[in-house]
Image (cartoon, rainbow, N blue to C red; front, side, top):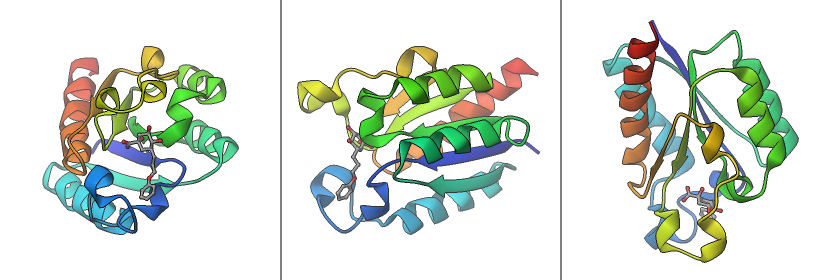
Length: 147
Ligand code: CA2
């Protein structure tokens, strides 16, 4: 059974409390529950984690090595700034899908650049919480091709 980690970064614990027009009305617990139900229907063992600190996200990525087959990663604002996360993704040698709820390219220009995209397998952005289901399907395709 493939195992996938969904890892969410800074401020995503606030989902559903503010800016629903950008990030949707669901809480992070709702989004994770939807993803869990979908993962089960696709025969995937899903683990979910969230942290607001960059170092803890690096540690989650390191821990995924050896315990997960792939990572779906919404790095939040660290996407645009973090060399540490980029190096961690390169270092774990696992497929990582960068995910954003919003279409970052339709927003402020500082959100247009991703520090991590070059070391990720692919990017999903702009589909709200449905993006996590799309990412699970995309990851299954990657893992099948890898096998
Ligand atoms: O669209 C995404 O998923 C983002 O990764 C979300 C980040 C943002 O910095 C990225 O550019 C795009 C921000 C997450 C903040 O989430 C909140 C949710 C509700 C209320 C306040 C913040």
